[in-house]
Image (tube, rainbow, N blue to C red):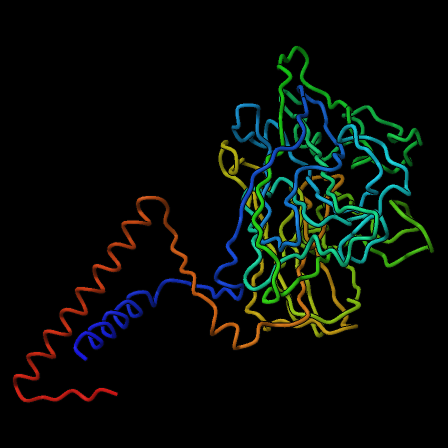
Length: 466
């Protein structure tokens, strides 16, 4: 009885001491450990002002029926060091899923395929086919944007029941990077201003419309932005390093659907139409005109873009984040009657080191609502708003919004049976020391309480124990 009582005291003390430590409950089985792996993209070589925008097929990716829990990426050099944005600007990286015919032999990452050789396995988003169909992707904000998926949720991939007979699930990586070392106009290069690239036709040889001043059509693969006369800089080998976390799929995991919204979406769709064009809804990018003195007096020099749409199915919000370019000041997704579903704000850097580059968006705030707290009903009108400063002209900016939706919430039984994971904002030896100190304090409290109980017993007190 005495030993049981001491154990209860110790457990109670630990709970009291840990009451200020944040935690989450995992609904995946305790034996289903999170796995992690880091991969490199194929090498790409950039010199001052040059551009890389390539699509690599069949890139390294975890195999099997699994649930993706996290995906992080960044540009590194050939020694493994992170490359700052003011040297190589990461316009975006995207990872898309597709099914490839098993009888097709791949000879390199950039091989051209017949349309019949592969089937796109896009996300659940609303844009036209071929646009914003990626599973993962960010831009300059990638280093400081949270991307983990909380338990018990995950992105399901590799389900044999979903893979067509005679095909294999594979992944494509798109990396769009711009070397701005020695650039005449670094911001202009990152915003793909056509005059800085001396571009008047698209990469497919079609003339650009007269009012197109900058954007993706002017900074395609192997284009060159203007650099200062006489500037000398070496060409260097770079890679996109991406790290993934996943678990083996089981019945306790709740799958999430990926939706990507675009503030330029007009809702227009032509039967069978794909890609960019005024006949399609999602234009992906738009320009910001500088404000006049009268504009400043009225709206404080802010460009506000809005669009509305509805989700085809109901669900619960698990995660949300916006994607904006330099000049962005935040984006909000609204639901019925103006309720805020998620508000995502940019984090601007303040220094020179990778991950804190002054003048660049180095992160976006994210939304992780309590499970079941934010529900989107089928057919509910949603409004997406994207805000930019208008203190100067911007070309090719974006107003995208990523959300993860689950069709159900965890049941109470699975939560009670789930292990508790403590999260302490410490690393390495500091973390270990904190754990040791925590248990030391718990033991000390337990001993003190026990000694006082012994004293009380000696004085005739009988504590009431349940």
